[in-house]
Amino acid sequence: MDGLIKKGLLVGLGAVSLTRAKAQKIINELVKKKIMNRGDGIALLKKVLKEADNERKRIKDILTKEVKRELKKAKPLIDKAKIIPAKTEKIGRKVARKIINKAYNLAQKKLIEAVKKIRL
Image (cartoon, rainbow, N blue to C red):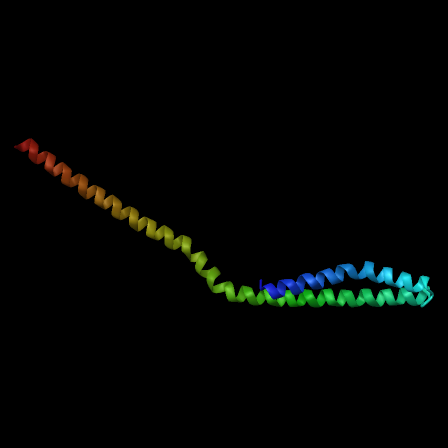
């Protein structure tokens, strides 16, 4: 994931997670100082929490789109990676056949040489 996206995500999630506690604290202070009444404080807290929820959803949507975009870019590589084991197995069989054939030919050659020595 791109560094900028990651940083944005962390800032957004941090802000959202702190929102309730901070908002509650600020509103309690405003009520305590009689700048607003308890009912207005509760209404404001609900509004702040709703905005935080909207922001959380917005961040989730951005991340989902970004992940899908990156997966779409990576799909050709993933598809190639799926083919590698089959190709490796096929190459391994070819190499094994060549080794067996060479060993067979060498053994056959040594056997012929041994037979010739016996005949002499």
